[in-house]
Structure formats: structure tokens, C-alpha cells
Image (cartoon, rainbow, N blue to C red; front, top):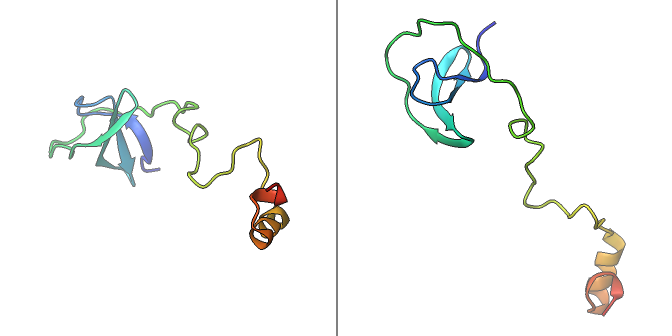
Length: 93
């Protein structure tokens, strides 16, 4: 199976490098900050070491910009009433 995902940078330029279909890409990571650095043209001479997944790397710490706050549930009827009567949400003018 070809390498896919974050691996320790075999070129030792960065902490981690993204591999796609077994090929090193320019996407690199150092101390959690991603950047770009094209891989050198030298061959990889050692075994690839995958990075262990952590909570920070699996995307669960990310929020969508259009996500509602967890303590607020969208009520489409309240939004409609709000626009129809000119009050703010839910008719609470």
C-alpha cells in the first residue's frame, strides 16, 4: 500500500511531510504549523514513519465558520416569524 497522510519528514527538513499516493508533497508541518517546501530530488533511503493521529490532527478541534453555537438550536419557524413581524429572532422584539 502506498503512503498516504502525514509521515516524519524523511529528508529531515521538517517534523512532518504529507505523502500522497506514496509520493512526498510540498505540504510540511512544524510544531503544528503547516507550510510548503518542495521535497528535494534525492531518493528516500529509509523506511517511512507515519505520525500517530492525535486529537489535534483529526479535525475534531476545528469548527465550521457557518456552524451554530452548540447551545443554540436553529428554529426555522422563529426565523420566519422574526422577518415577518420585524422583530429579532423568534418574535422577541
